[in-house]
Image (cartoon, rainbow, N blue to C red; front, side):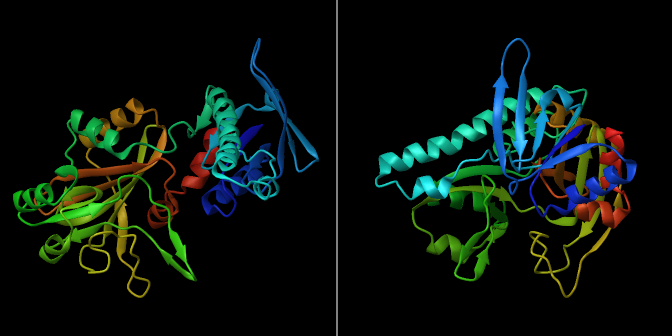
Length: 325
């Protein structure tokens, strides 16, 4: 049996499941909406655990042959709202959040063991990578990256701005989830820094990640799966809305995408990077610049691959299902 961990509404996981159903392969999909309780975890002599799903089905670890971790974690039954309603002060809140973290610790332990299966894709431990570690490791492997600095001082910002010919961008240091205010959603994107912003900013500001603004011919999104690369070129540079960040989708004028093959020497370096940081899958962002150089930007271990798959007819959902057959 294949154990799949994901989130409800993840279209990519549902497509993989469709193929597994077609093949008649036995699996169980656990998402954040299922009611899951823990019967037990036996640590010795060999790890064994048993879960109860929706008060009906029992899943024993001995029945799990393969493991596909997509995103999220097992949300063990714990009535947070009921517990939260009894809390009265900050000390009790700390206890509450400690209880929530306990669930993640337990799932991390289970996931670490499941990742020892002969067939597995994904890794909870490295689902959230340190963007700065990734950049430094990429550079150490001989992969070109943009000039990068982290600062909160206007003086340093100004020096970096001038050094890079007044062409720099700001981006999030870590993943930044969307923020809802009233009925509007606010997302974090890559943005250009200009003279006006520098003149108006305080001498001390919040710690920020700054990079040289690479003038691109096009962007490359590559999905990495078990040592293989599936890539597309994204021609987002001619649209003012998307030329800094293609995620600012222009619904009225969609950018062109085509299948793409990354040079073998770059593939080999990124493959070494992925193995070094413990990843066997992930979405990789690259820029091909006007001066004909490839610049590595980042890895998202849980990144969506649907656009890559559909744009180039890679049929990645089937490839993932085939791996488990």
